[in-house]
Length: 331
Image (cartoon, rainbow, N blue to C red; front, side, top):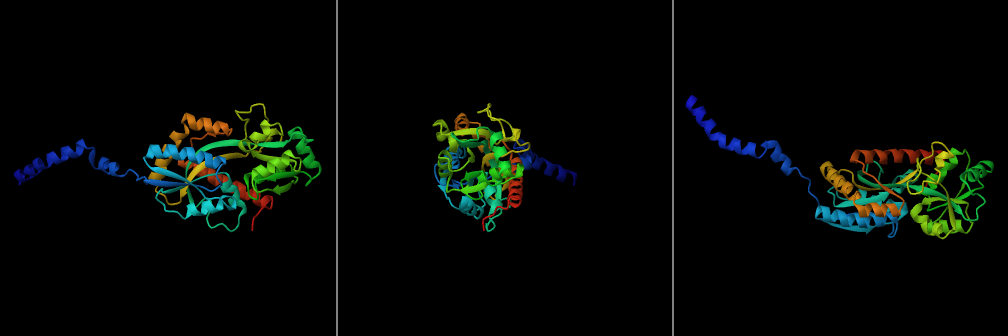
């Protein structure tokens, strides 16, 4: 019996040696656990071509395709404040073949639309945040309100008199303006437009009193001297405009930032989401991407999957509360 066991051990030694050399059964399993990346990925932008979401998506798609050895195609699916594209992605295959590049509007729009066919938190798997940026509180060059204090004092004195423009109901422009009104315990009259360009042109023409918009959308009118920035919406002063005060300096606690990020359908395998997060974070550190963000007065973000998920959850909760407090809804 002893001889038989000895013989078995001798027979097993070469196989055991080979297993050890390869790192053991756990290592072999790890080698086969690498997430499969689709050969073709569609990156949906739920807004029309030309805006910051679209610009970011096209540069990201090129670089992500190179890193993954995949073909990444950008597809614009605009409409309903981003809801049409978001619904398409929520229903897409959960294999990484369809992603979405969206922004803060994803959560503000969801807060005011009561008939969405997706849940902004449960229907998506946040993948990676790209960048964040303050917005600008702007007035026309001939506005009687030449400081933030002037504007806020006028708003408190005569509730409802001040008018503000936005890109539409549920836009981040509207929500940021309503937080401002709530903090002053007053009200402003909302004038929704079909896009920021129309709102800003009317602001420059003196037909509305103020707009809270992205620096990218206001850039040309600011350079032309037709608008003036009174303050920024971020909790701290912008590194690009350090001389500009924050709204929080006049209204403590005020804080709104735009963000851009990539999301996948809920249920996309976690290893694949983690891989995409790592690749996108590496791309965000690319000099070309940083320069592009700077043109939008944005700074790159390097959040983990869980950190980005927490941000989306917090934003969704925040904007729903604002919508309730300010009685904002789209039936």
